[in-house]
Image (cartoon, rainbow, N blue to C red; front, side):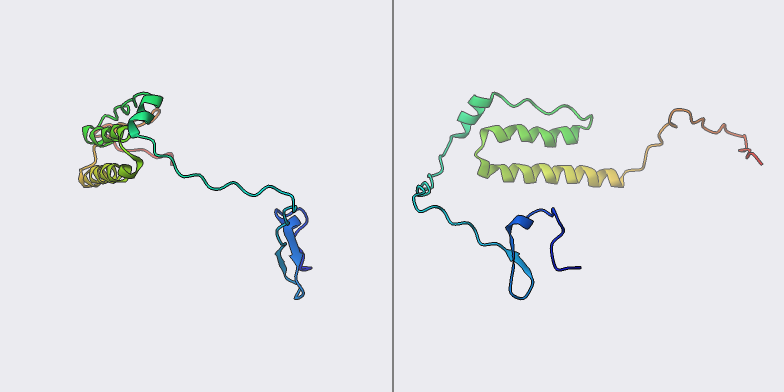
Amino acid sequence: MSGEPPAGAPGTAALDVAEDGTWRPAPAPRAPENAPAPAAPQEPRTVPAGAVVAALGAVPPPEPTGDERVDAALGRLVELAGLPVGDHVEIFEEVHRGLQDVLASVDQQTPVPRPPGPGIVPPRPGHAHRSGA
């Protein structure tokens, strides 16, 4: 190890070697003296939520999932379009809680036997499985 960054490593052009031999970020280049002053920051604009809905159009409801509880939870997301962004957190938390409840109830249910996949023949009742040996 030579104490130098690998050739072609990202960011090596902006490094300097300090007196102790370590690599340090190079100082930022100075702006020319005749450069224009940076623009003053603009005040944030407040846009009414209804204006966003009018500009984007109505938000379509989510596609059905096949589970009424999941569909009900996801259906709440449609309400976001008419609310200020600050109120979105409450809706997201409610949807998240609802989906967590659905998942927790699925974990507690008895699993339903699924049919075998393609190419898999289920064993016939009363027949012992024969191995190739």
